[in-house]
Length: 449
Image (tube, rainbow, N blue to C red; front, side):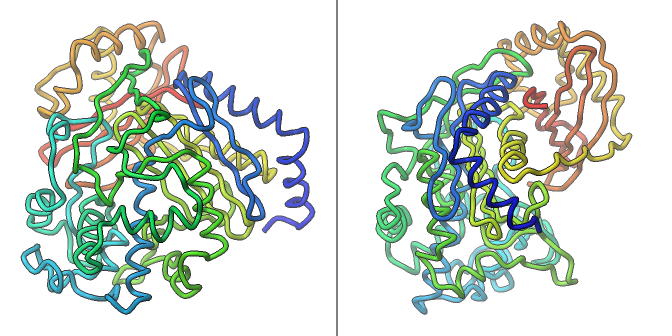
């Protein structure tokens, strides 16, 4: 833990003349990334001390916050538990008995992603199916009746299906629409005036963009009605996320016991860590204890970090996916305000690299071997996308190296993160591989170094 005088200095740093330095950090990161805009809100000691948008937006622009919505869904079920209307240890079968192994899976397991239900939306680009309308029940019928990915409580695997189910349980038990409840119990009391369903358009809504490799930002389609519900349907300005963070630190909405449950890491049956509580990741961020969540829907990325030991939070929202901006920027902001050292990069591994190198070299020529990809991935690599890949990758020069940085399971697939170093620039690769070896997703992303 940092000495007290360092924290006091940080308070002065934000609120005094050095706020211009923060402007410079954010502006430089936005320019390097090429994203249309980014909006940042910082809280300290129960106040918003920094609130500003950069680029083609202002502080009143409303962004989709994606899976940050899960924080609100988890809070809603904790609120019902306080009222004695359910228990987090209730079996799903009490509410939806026809789902797979519903008599074994608990509400706590769906909120902590330890249920085994397969993720219906792991891709980081919009697939054709998502452009039409759906319903939460249709999602559950298709995805929560599949065989589980693992026995309940034995593994952790992120799944949006869990939170669609959580939202349906909330509405069945409460007899109230989830959004109506959020407005009545959370948004209005915390004065989150812009928070609401992204489908309810407002004049100040930011436009969502995507990018193919290092090509230009392109306006992107949004998901059709019903696809995200309690898993990621919310839009708001950055300051309203910050007001939620202040209320969270002040324990204004729930009891102290519920906030303890909210932030308590759920462990697996064998005692192993998950680094996840209920709708919140639990870990150190830039060396500081934090609870946090990110979000991504078509055209938008979001990160929200709450630092209980610092009585502070950082929110970063952007209206472009396909760019590595918000995570590195949040880390730069934390390093600046808390006077921290930047962490070293993870050590790379050497696997699957020949195929990835071949794909990148082909993309630099505007081509792909479509036999390597699924139908969804082939729909992503349209004529426009291949043109942008060619026009942006070819000028980078020789592909120097590709290293694998991470690997984990999600949505019945293997997710892998790579670093691709070209002669003139370094990119990150965001890849999903199906069990049969076909590639469901390969996104080359520039961003903040």
